[in-house]
Length: 319
Image 1 (tube, rainbow, N blue to C red):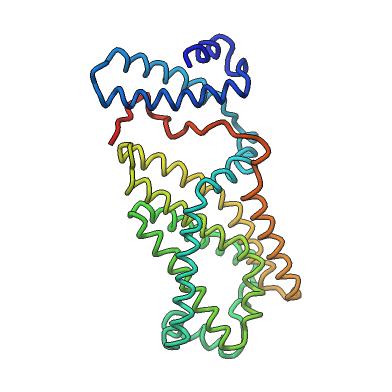
Image 2 (tube, helix red, strand yellow):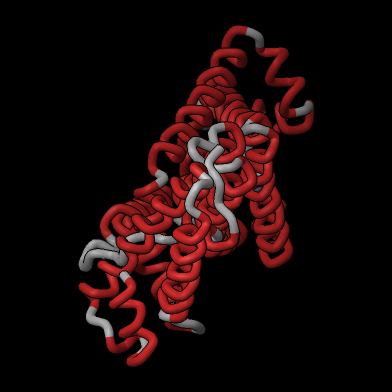
């Protein structure tokens, strides 16, 4: 590691090949682990200082290689974000499970106790459904304003799902589960009124992006909760900082999804477009989303992630 760091100092990061840069990143992580052990032992202050200095120099070179501007933004969405999604996939699956459980619970409560539907949706919306009418007519009549309001609401829901992770995940569980309950109640109410096609043809175009975005925000909140509750070998503050970095990046990727979903919900979903076209648009958007998340960024091997050791030179200590 010392040799590669000295070469980077003389020639710059561009003087290292991709293989050498990956090797430097791996050695950085190994040296960081060694430093953690030495600090825990406390019997070799000289070695600790040398390792700390070496890590500080290597850290500067590794992070100075990052691109800025549009190139960074492009790399984030085309490469980094899909990789982050796949890395945190278990949290997304947990978020999906919470949402699905809430939807099933809402549907069952509506079927068993119809008064629950009246309490949750309110009398005006229930009467509209009983008349076999959709409640979305005002949206289509004032699409620009409605689209802006929808985006704002969706952003507030996703941020609440993310921020709820700081409460040990309880806030996230509530937001995701409650949104699932709402979907379940509305779905059951529309099914009882023989309006399922009307409902899902409205939801499909924008829901293909909006619902996954909310689930990803839930995954971000759960990742934040994991860093808070299960720090592992690291100090709780450092563990939380690492988790927050992952969670914030996962949340950031949902913003374009919500902008597109809000535009579609304001202009296209409540329109008189053919039902088949609405389902087709939803299917195409969802297929594109899955292709991006699961396949993008696989064309080349990424440099090993060293971000979790970003603050090690300044004083990482085992828990």
